[in-house]
Picture 1 (cartoon, rainbow, N blue to C red):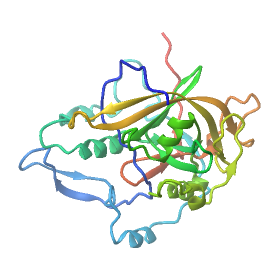
Picture 2 (cartoon, rainbow, N blue to C red):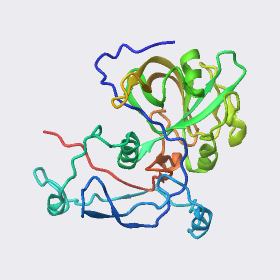
Picture 3 (cartoon, rainbow, N blue to C red):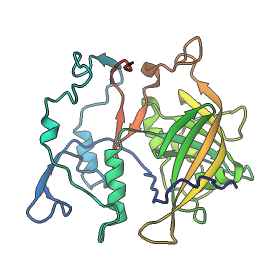
Picture 4 (cartoon, one colour):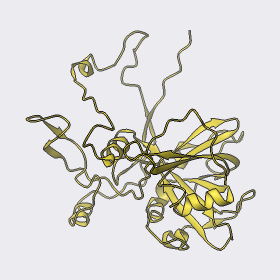
Amino acid sequence: MRRSILSNLSRSSSFTPRSFNSINCQTLSHRRSPILGPGRHRTLSQTSTMFKVGDDFEKIQASRPDFKHDVPVTFSKPPNPEWKQGDGANDGGESLKKDHVEIDPHEDGRPVAFNYKLLISGMVPRPIALVSTKSKDGKTTNLAPFSYSQVINHDPPLFVVGFAGSFDKAKDTLKNLSETEECVINIISEHFVEAANATAINAPYGVSEWDVSGLTQAPSSIVQPARVKESVLSIEAKLVETKEFESRTTPGKKTGVLAIVEGVRFWVRDDAINEEKNLVDLKVLKPISRLGGISYGRTTDALEIPRPQF
């Protein structure tokens, strides 16, 4: 097992959400916030099932409009096409009229879960890595989604995946990855979002999420774990190193692991890649992203702004 030499990384907690479902568009109004202090209230526009599915979820879900499969990716002008250097925000100064709430993530009485909820609802949208692994003995396979993930370099191609918990209590993906040093990162698209969501099930070790999801295993060329055939983009990867983190609130308790992996093979569906094999077509990829709670997003609107030059 490779362990980290990243001495510059500070210690912190790490959490990985385990499921994502459709967004609930109801609004919660005048909820009291303990952070704001006595007598201060805030109207929140968020989902009523932000972090918990209620008994009425099926009824709410049934009342929503059907998913529109044929929604194209539309490119629009930026909010202020006439913006020039020095203009600042494009809202005419409205954002400057708003106050901010200062939050100490480790203040007395603040549950650690509050940081989790704040971060996954504010750091959005997040890409989702649907990670495929195989056990060291080759007898079991695992498939699970992680939204604590990102590409961090291109030469070499490097990616990070964050895991909740410790090595001592490692769940399937982390256990397999640390023992075999191999995985496949699959990007989730609209056409298999329900199946990808099913892989977040809390199945016991040894139970394959491939069977639960109904997704199709396709052979990889460099690593042992299979790639998801339905995925438009898959990345075979090998472990570079890992870093385990310690809780700030409970010293001595290990709460998260960061894994850095290197991409050694890319697989792109032939109708999504250009002739030079250097661009993935967003209109074909139709990626699914992670939002707060159990909600997710799709990319249907985009804009282009040239990078400025001095």
